[in-house]
Image 1 (tube, rainbow, N blue to C red):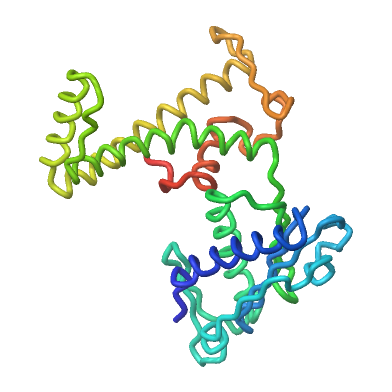
Image 2: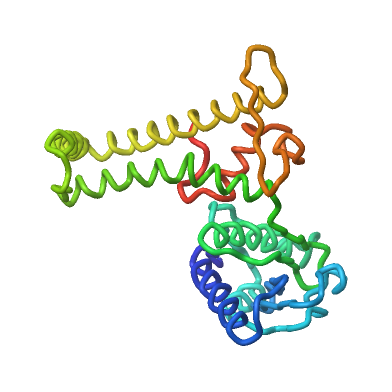
Length: 279
């Protein structure tokens, strides 16, 4: 069985290094193509500068710079050639080769994996508009960062990840007994109390606290976004609030779920460094 989790960081590094190398040698790409053949065990990176993805016919082999980067995984080929080929993604889901679906079943499994990996990489690095395409397959998608994506990234960073990072820093400081002594006496005493509390918790209690903190942060963000949405919808008793991004009114954006608070779930999945929405 191939555990794709073992390869994710290697693919992440490959994408970032190849993209940086392309920028240094050729300039800023207008788009990138991630092209994959799982049974032959390779992923190639392809780039455009002048061409649009539409002009390539949504086809990586027709990009301006084809196979600018290539990475091979012999294990993938060996697994595919075995009699009981199977693969496990990062969620733990196991796909076993299906004779009826054939290669397209494998393509679909890797296509979903690569899309998820793209969003994971994009949390840490700015990526160009990207075509993800499987060889000889119907499975492909073109990902463009939209105004809605930028809004989602901003909200997740400011309302979720910054708050959780602060909590994580409190835990780390408590574990290392690190104190910031360059602060007022009352704040130093408060920090000592917090660290004493955190160090006094059992592992199971600390895990429960992690979930509670995440739940509070997520529900605070959800409630605020619901209030803003109700205001933009002109609900009775709400304040007159309007948001803009890239010069566009947020109320006029094509929200995936139809509401800011509904899209929050999708934004957490795509852009947050701290896991899924905590109920």
